[in-house]
Amino acid sequence: MNDWPEAWSDDNRGPRYGQGSASAQPESARVMRQVRRGPAAPPGQGAYGGTVPQQPSYVDGRGHGGDHDSGYNTGQVYGSPGGGGYGGPGGPGDDGRYAQRPAPDWRRRIKVTAITVAAVLVVTTVGTYFWADAKLNREVDLSIVLDRPEAGEGTNYLIVGSDSRAGLTDEQKKNLRTGSAEGKRTDSMMILHTGSNGPTLVSLPRDSNVEIPTFKGSESGKTYQGTGRQVKLNAAYAEDGPELLVRTVEFNTGLRIDHYVEIGFAGFANIVDAVGGVEMDIPQDIKDTKSGADLKKGRQTLNGEEALAFVRTRYALAGSDLDRTKNQQKFLSALANQVATPGTVLNPFTLYPTMGAGLDSLIVDEDMSLFGLADMFWSMKGVSGGDGTSLNMPLAGSTGGNLLWDKAKVKQLVDELKNDEKVTVKGD
Image (tube, rainbow, N blue to C red; front, side):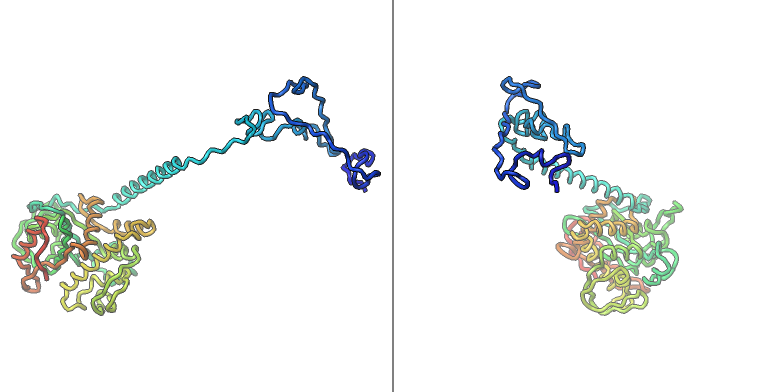
């Protein structure tokens, strides 16, 4: 068997040491060509003037050869033009050594990364601002409110929870126990004052006895003269909406309302669900067939349906509407605490659904900004902690089922709010 490549025979091998050799002698030492560094010699001439013989071309019997070995026998190192390696003749460093790779410029990399991250944050923040700003429903025109009180220190928000069923399906109305009544009424009304002495949240019982003053119709534009009519506070909203409600609150308190914020049933439940529920300490067992509340005493996390039932519960509580307003204050403060946590604010998968649910369902005045809305939420968070204060409007009895305000205490409360002083008045 012939182990040599094709076209080679045993006779071509000559005397060799190894298999098939006639004489077991090692072959003589070969003379290896020396690769000298220096300037390349002219074609056909050695480095010292001698003639370089033409190198043979080998053919392996398969048609390969010719340039197959080109450059190898001349000492050329592959990968560098002119026969030089990276540090060889003709290479960048002609000193016989390989050049060192430059060390990474970490300062530059960190700077580029920081600039890129900052740019992404700026673009995201600006984009989020315009997205959120476009979602605000600025529907309330406070410019038509007549005879407004002089503005004081700090900012006053009138926060209204309405029984609007807009956006609810029949199944949701059934699950949330909202009924299907037409129109809108107010289930809760609160004044939130923000200033340098901590936030103050004052609940206005919907059964408060108030006078409807002269006002300008929000849709008709007509002026309706006051006749001294005494009604429950929530009747003002039912009669001509947010503008008349603001006018009535300002007329009966003497406190200027800077901003109006309203949320309906659907929006309230959606916000609670978006943040993953709100933890509350329920003060007593509550079972109310009208609101749908069926809660046990103790600390627990309420979902949207349970939370709505809790803040609407009235008949299962001993103090009726007054106890309900206290529960509403506690819940709104707990909700604000939940929304304003790093787990919500820094998590886009929670933040954007929460913002979307809230902004879609809020109705605000035309001058409300996102910064004003954020101030309201942060202040609400501080109501139950720090320097925050919460109270019901001071009362002095009732007449015909309507709750009468204590005029002296109300005046003192309003004066303290106007001057942005620490509230010392105690409410019911």
